[in-house]
Image (cartoon, each protein chain N blue to C red):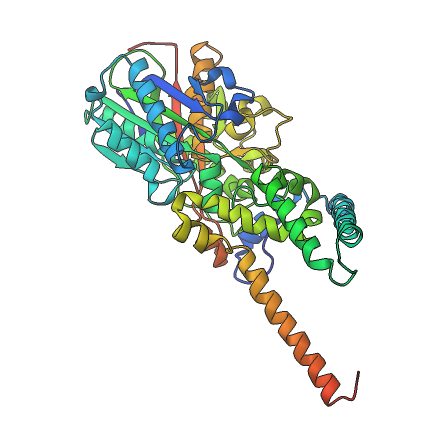
Length: 160
Length: 338
């Protein structure tokens, strides 16, 4: 992919970028969207089924079934990562496996597996969240901002 | 002897007396599996870590080359090797096992030909009788270092390439039978401003073209002089780009005489996207498959242009572009024996 954002490219480089771009295999964006939609949808259906499972067979309500459902989905994604199939499904599904919570589980466990050879403390412990860490950080930060906006709106804006 | 600007002509024509290649499970299912001396069905090679497995790949290739060369380990006077891992530990550790005086070289995926060019130069000028040279890469060890964890589910674009698990080694000598190294052209670092590490082929293509042009100019030969010009690991996109670039620069070459190691090693149905890459790619394909075919008399003159992308994960994250390099080595077989 030519990097058009760079301002300091020479004319020769620019010419080459166009030359190269013409011969580059494009990402099949439309196909990827459909695959992501279907695989992501299937994962959500499985999640919904697990959620109903907890509601019918255990003492959970629609509000409280969320936590065990997420835990189960993450657990499943970890199993699939561990036996080495998650990354293959992901190559097919793209965002379909990355966006649901299973993608988060995969990011954590794949890093943990990867760095196992470096020991538990400096390997697994230190590297486990090297991909998922930014999700946690920016997720928490985004939640904080939203909560702040809501609080301001409710307290002084007269909403709610 | 230097000819032109950056080409060495080896008038004593050093001989590649023996070569050895070792591959992993993915290579065993590939197109040229029969050309490997040793294939492993397990990526771990029975070791505790991928890095150790990587080292074993190189060791096995070295020992096999020594054995096929019919010499003892102690007869190896120097060894020149490299790989892609931080501080080149697999090569360094394999050199510890061999015990010969050692030079580590880093040219990313062009290391194989960088090593062969230097070996031939030293042998040609009487610096040694036997030099062992090689390069290797290990898919998961390299992915771990340059990309995401191996089991991470990130979708790779169609321009991405698959890192070869394999090692290739060659024993270069002043005398003996075998293909001869006749010339080498050292590459310049070429940066055309591309920065996508999932499109190395596109980034490296201009470097390959630059070196091929320099070689032909220095040697004062036409592009049709070579029966085969083979690039290291440009993949589908890089090969097409460099093919068209050569044509545009007035150096047209027939399709079948311009091959790429990254497209020779795997089958069409293997999920490698744009093709193969890695320091082990050109090393295993050239030292195994291509030299075997050369010895069967399929071609007499071959120019190997190994390409390398000189980036690190750090430079990519800091938004640097990808500087690339290519080294060319001309190998001849058959015809007049001196």
